[in-house]
Length: 72
Image 1 (cartoon, one colour):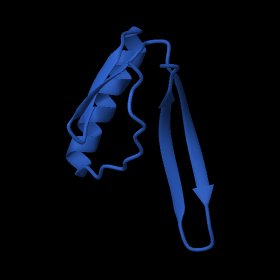
Image 2: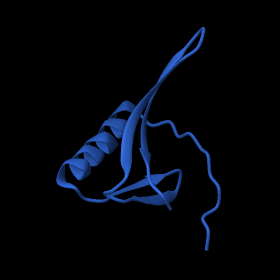
Image 3: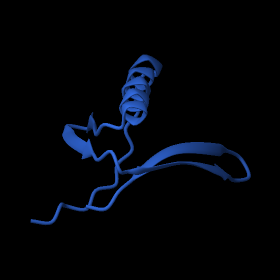
């Protein structure tokens, strides 16, 4: 069964965001998979996932995205 297409953006408090980043960093450092729940859906990120940082700039704003990508 193929997963449904999904494109959401979820805002977290600074404290919640830091906790998620810490768990992600720990998983990456130990070479383990990472599990996260976003807007009610549990996501399993494999340890082989590719991580990158993206920076976007427009006339009136800038954005940094911490991205994690993997094949389904």
